[in-house]
Image (tube, rainbow, N blue to C red):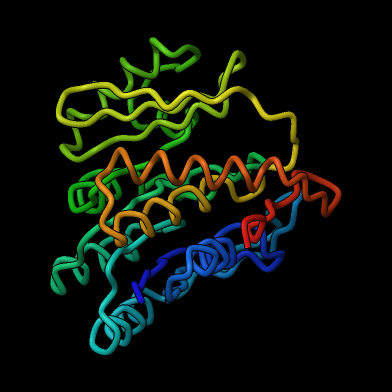
Length: 259
């Protein structure tokens, strides 16, 4: 059985973060492990509080995992301050972690800011360089490239600009586009589009967490980056089309739609 480690924040309502990652990994019939970086009080409506885990305890969790059950892939989600980011980077390099999928979580689906301002530079300089692939959505891509992204052409320009800071693969998610939900992969100086029409479902809580975890699973399984993204897109499309409707805001996906 392949083993997948998620390093992320907890979502007490179960739709995003560690909880979404564990559900996604389990749905892929793989073994899920977690390192919790923060506790959040949140639901489908918004984020009401964040309690960060100390960097030393994040390090202890990573040690406990790698010294006993070495993961085949690592997904990184919410990392809210620079000290935690530095610890994660140091430990993953120390253990030679592979198949690292970094979802640079900066803004929640409900619009709440989840990344401290001083953490951005450390994320770019310490964590992004060790990632196999990063998976920003359009608002996150705008933060990383420094200009507005409104069209598919803008997404390509953003990928080129982000690539100046990060030499790995870049997947810019197009869920915020008006005309479609096409995702763009930039790898080895080439563009690959994963086309997807908009799905009429307002319940998108945890889509970024779910997609990045699915990519980690597929990389661990042995797929290449394009195959991993294509399979992950198929999985998350099914989870959205299952039309689960929970909560008063942007509800969660049905992670078990294919079981």
